[in-house]
Image 1: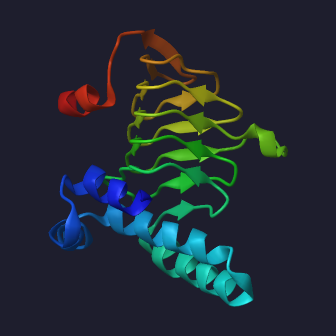
Image 2: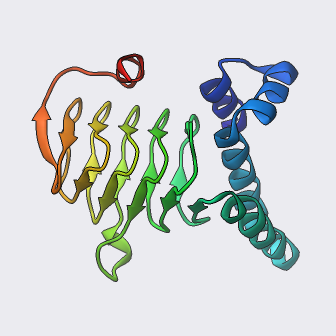
Image 3: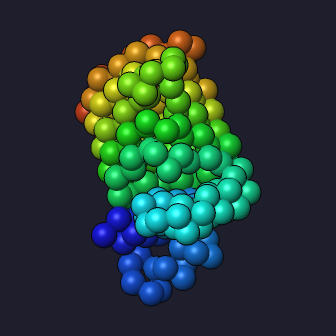
Length: 180
């Protein structure tokens, strides 16, 4: 279940104790949980769509972030500081991805195929922008304030405006978090 994986990813705990800790100490976990509930309700008739809209507007936008209900997000999303986060409609996010504050994932044109895809274990640091039909490979790291408009190979570090590949090391998301 996605909720349990989100809980363990954000708190390192599971069960009722983990849920209490998550709701008290992890605003990112709260936002991901509300988003998953809204997404589930969206497919359950007219009342469900209305409730999902209310949840999305009050719980997500009221906390300074926007995650489209049309985005596809795998379990384990970590949002340490979700303020200013924007995730567009066609974005695809893999497992165990970490997004810091003020990250924008969006499209570059009017086509639905113009959205980015983040594979598993990606870390995107504060203020980074990933736009267009870009694929960020497994365990890649996007540096703070980078503007990514080209594919990033797996295990790479991308930085700059526009982003350049600085290294192609076998860096994992967990080792990137330890270095931060």
